[in-house]
Image (cartoon, rainbow, N blue to C red; front, side, top):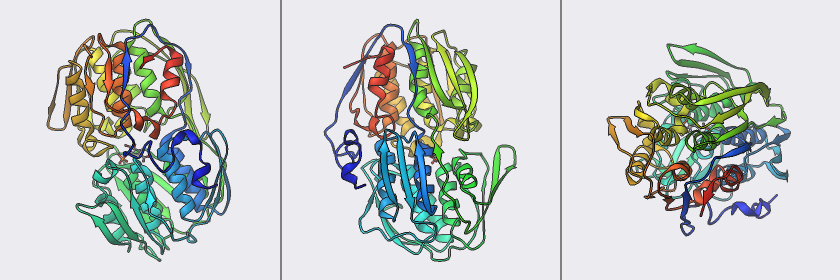
Length: 461
Ligand code: S3P
């Protein structure tokens, strides 16, 4: 399938999600009780990885429930450029005919990842372990994000950075290693993207690649590699860490992948139901992977009324339905060690904290400064614009919850989908409406956010 035959609503390649479309402000207004059921879209992390596994396996990988957000469509396009045949069969149903580990094509075009850090970094790992050269680029947000953390270990493995923008930013041209050197690598920051890049480069190495992380990060790469037949072992390391050992040059066999619902997208409806009076909402099929449920743990500590129902396995992951009801929340102290398990959920937790009573302190948020925006600053500024008292102390964000929020502000989203969705949720429960300066980026991870929330009773526009 060509890029042109991607689903039309996703504006593949240009405009929407690319950071150069005209801004599209959106306002959320106080609404009545939210009710009904919501099935969040497929998990973004697993969607990227499913396509990449399909690229690296020889034969046909079938994927169900793929997130058809702009970020993932960029990865699909990059996989095509690297030699896979990637076809959309129907909503969320995709087929990948892999090029195979060690047999990737040199892309003829620049790999344009738009807003997508995950696709960029994981495929830098893949390219870094192959005798091919590729150029990675993206939108204004991606061009600000640090890539040195990925390029450094890849260089140790024998890849060469042919060119890069100042400070190790994209556009980056990377020449991969024909025979990547197996390394033992301690990740200097807790990052699943970094861990995954090293493992994916190590796949094509003739030896054993070891990654040690002092704080365990999401393990979807490890699980999918094992599922596709790689020899990979993960063991505890220190108090919160993991040591992952991968044997190079496995035969990867295509396997069907069912993508579970994304807890990071579910988070918006979950918090909306907690803060809009009278709400009673069921969120279906939420992935309960322990390395992704930090938000749930935090909200429970804050006294949230959440019932976990029908725990089951779907697509190799623990999933459950959540029944979420409005109720009072109290401030909490969120430990730094929980950050990797809820790294993308701090903006929406900050919104919940505004509606709680008492102070919420979120510790150890340094990594938030290098997400799609400087999320620490963007959240603090957005809260201030909406009349919520807050402060940053070192790497901690402190929100003074007053049980309500004034709203009434316009929030700068800085090309960041999660900032946009978080403050729209705030507007559903605040005294005055909340406007976000641009809603285009929501299409990167949750293209159906607006209609899905409207079906529950949310009011936008
Ligand atoms: C992701 C890992 C996280 C997260 C990102 C997705 C992944 O980033 O913020 O949205 O799929 O591996 P880091 O690993 O850099 O913390």
